[in-house]
Image (cartoon, rainbow, N blue to C red; front, top):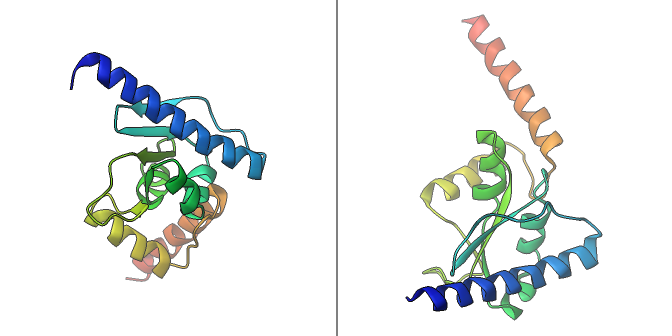
Length: 150
């Protein structure tokens, strides 16, 4: 792909993503942090709130994604992983259809396994960072207590 075409495609993707952001803001009244963690001609990693509000919203609004020709990675790989790894949550949106052709896709097998663990431990989609951190602290205390009993 030539440089001029790549720049045009990147601008087009940014325009599409910002149209979805506008729909999100109109419904939620939530302002997102400015900018992207990464932006290419095919994929944009849009900065999200600490709670991952935009990523979770996108999973509930597939029609909006379809209207703009976008697909999104499941928040387990962008929000929950960021919490676990101590990073900043983001929402990955792409114009490239995954092999499944689903609007919400698993980036890898680890994401699918992480989602199962997330659900099995009583976590719920859309939970806040504070609720997740509180649960994580409880799990740490339980594990320590189990080790102390040995």
